[in-house]
Image (cartoon, rainbow, N blue to C red; front, side):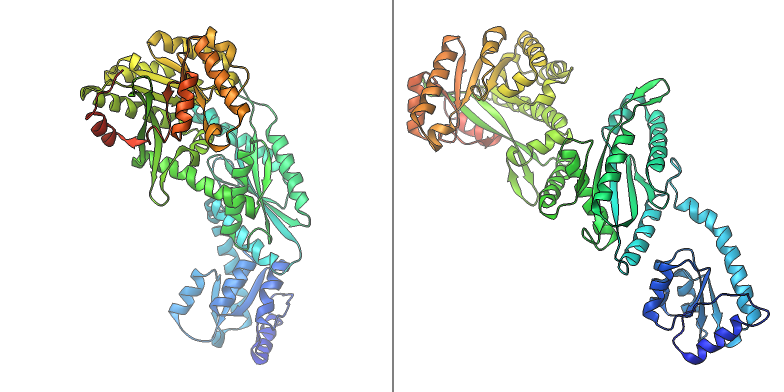
Length: 550
């Protein structure tokens, strides 16, 4: 019973102690501020309280199970309706209240609650797994936060996401994917304590709430247990599946004071756990996760940017100093970000590779670049096109077939195209690179080795593979020139020319470096001193006014 007025409190006590009532075991709360604390600390069947919206809200947040009967001192249908909407089980006018009316109100409210709980439970349950859903999670989070504000113990929120679940769905179908989620749900039930809540909030995303957390390390132990349990092999419909999970952890009150903050911070920690290699857990870290949040925004922006046409191609010339003409243009990707302006690949390429967006992005780049070649060929300009390919594209089994179709569609001769493959990518994926280089050579496309000399194992591939030329990074000659670095580049160029390979020097930023490279035999130059990357319109306008050789 919550009532600060002594006379009203005495009247209600008399009703509860009447022979026709109860029998009721009554606790009295005279302080309105103390009411929510009492309700959250103990299990009460019912609570009598004044019809005050703020008190009702606190009481309902503190306990979702307790029947709330409001004692009303005025006859206001609007006020009573608002109270029912706010979670009251019944409104009792004080002037007509007696022991029999109080008993009937309690019995009827309990019956209504019992019949409504089935529908309420269905509305808060995930139909596929039987776990709670987002509505139940948010309600329980609010209750735990309110209790945690008055208790020295905290709690933890674990954001759980299955690694590569989409690939399982795409490979075996959604039917088997649903069966897998049901198995995962059962494993989570067995892993968690009885008092902990587990909810499925979407796709392959689950959230666990850990009650009465005395030490954050306890959350780490449970996260490790979850990861270990979910990694055990699963056999479904004759298919043997290996599943792993990543977990992000946020604790109350240290990592957030509201449900939205805790969910967001656990999600950011999950993102970092995935970035660290998956199949692991990470705690929310305000400093490190600020960068994570930025990366997540960029990654989401990449998806939107692809759909909204925010990407552009700029072209940088590669010039032959023997006759001073442009022999090729390299297609360089730019992102016209609506808030951050024009971004170079340094700002987003790693995130594109991590998210898998590099494949549709690379396909778009090749398609757009081939259209550009067609335009400058139609304008009488005969320059090759240079395009970088990522390790993800290298490992695509249909990459060469897709390129062949794009070449046929654009009507661009294959010999006009040179693809640049990074030296470290060649060394990491030697078997795929060998097959790709051979297939591209058969197609008529040139292969160049980019960042040549940064590793120490690619020399043997120059003779074995149909590699047309190499690109060397010359930034050291401008930024921090040294005799040793100069000798190394000189020997690298001499060696490559001795193996009958063309040599292009990139990042040429001044006339001194250009002259030095030309004397060493690196006559193909690229860099800001040679020419900055430009949109296609500027490129064609400039090239059309001067002769360009193939």
